[in-house]
Amino acid sequence: MNEILGILDNLISVQSDTHDKIKNISDYICDILDKQNVVYKRIKHTENQAESIIAAINANDLRDINSGILLSGHMDTVSGDAEQFLPTHTDGKIYGRGAVDMKYFIAVVLALIPELKKQNFPIVLSLTGDEETDVTGIKHICEFMQVNNIHPQMAIVGEPTNMDTVVAHNGYCGYSTTVFGAPAHASQVDSGINAIYFATEIISYLRMLAEQYQKRGTTINVGRICGGTQRNTIAGTTTFDWEIRYASDADNENIIRSVTEFQNKLMQQTPGLGMQNNIAEEIYALKKENNSKITKVINTTNKTSPIATEAGFLQKHGIDTVVFGAGNIQHAHTTNEYIEEKQISNYADALIKTINSFDKRDF
Image (cartoon, rainbow, N blue to C red; front, side, top):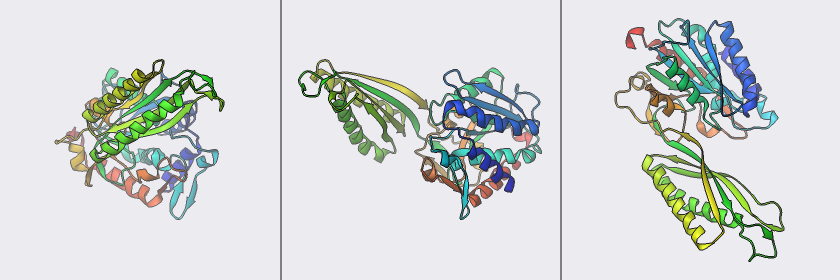
């Protein structure tokens, strides 16, 4: 346990909340993999400055792996102040950015490498560098696996689930909407079109939809807004970022159709007003598999969840996938993010017990 905590402290200490800083935490992880003689590949992203890591325990090469288990996590975190990357231990809890989401998982896996080497089947590690932003790393991992004939039969994504097994979760679409008005002097309201005003109308409409769809398990959130140039000028443009975490494909489609119709109505009523919606990122839903072998092995409560993870990408790659992790997602992305040491210990025991329950004949 002390080794896990030591690695976790080091991981938290490496600031990894921007694409260009992922290399630093990747360096630390790869140093451990080198010392453990684990084969790995650092995959540079083509869309940003981040990178991801794919590794394989009990394999001589990163090719032609058609059995075993994949363990998946992400190295990046949401943004944080410098002091949040200084790990602190108080009352049996570890505080720090990424403690629960999800550097604890990487620490557990790295510390367990000697135990994982005792297995008679391959264990693939997928560690991505931009899960909190672009979500392109997992796409690169899946592409690499496809090209190199790497097809583990089962996968565990270690996002925090309170030790429950999440067998299905929402899909996710992140959008960026830009409203184009017409700038003018603030005193000449008839000469301009205030993009901020119309952006807030759309946001209010999204809030109304959010209240309707929340009962169905689908959530809508507006996370950022930016517009205008200064106080005495009518805002010419406004951009806001929002998301849909949908319980069904139909919910996502219906929300987009409804928002588009509302926007078209505003533009028809106000000549010169323009709008553009762009998809910033998309995460596939994890869908429940009735004959999931990994679900039967992990002896916990099976649940569905509104969270979105990289599990859907692995499932689309043909891998029997669940989300199973320690800690509470409610503590992620908060100012005082933390995970309890006891939770980490219990999770490490449960994870190795699960992996030990398999034999090469099971794949």
